[in-house]
Image (cartoon, rainbow, N blue to C red; front, side, top):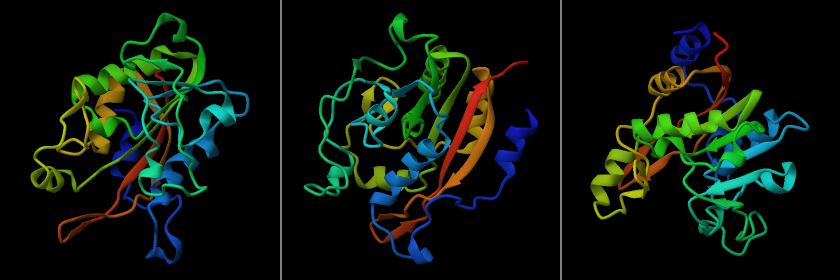
Length: 232
């Protein structure tokens, strides 16, 4: 295991981005803002971008950076589930450029991009799907390209699934429609990266809001990492 990976695994969790005002109050917009701000902050000017499992592109990557958006279908805005009718995130449709499984991208999208984004995707995946998605994202990159990965370590998922046994199981094979159990953590992510020939060049702890399930409150934990092809 390389030094950067060990450093990330053993680093205590201290949110470095978008903590709630006063450390107490928050609204649901901050989970989305934290995820998107990581990408906006670390996007290199002029870099081409592919947004994998883009949803409704609530981060506005297509508008801001000309990102190519890919997903298995089109959805109602995830932010509007909480803020319908507000100006914070207008309802978006028609933002998906390629409708396909992100593990099976067309050849025209390979070897083309400076940056691939995987935002709140990997925590839905079993091992086989996670490895396939990372390999697919890697294939989209030019030699100097990078992948931005943002994911929560959702400690509430076991409790949630016990209370919601009828939740639809998969978006597509191997990709759950909920956060998988046990939750994806840093050590497992590093294993996936090393198996697919990727290495971390930057890592940041991101603030995610706590999750309430029944009468239990689970702390929010999230990460943003930037990875490149391993040169070794």
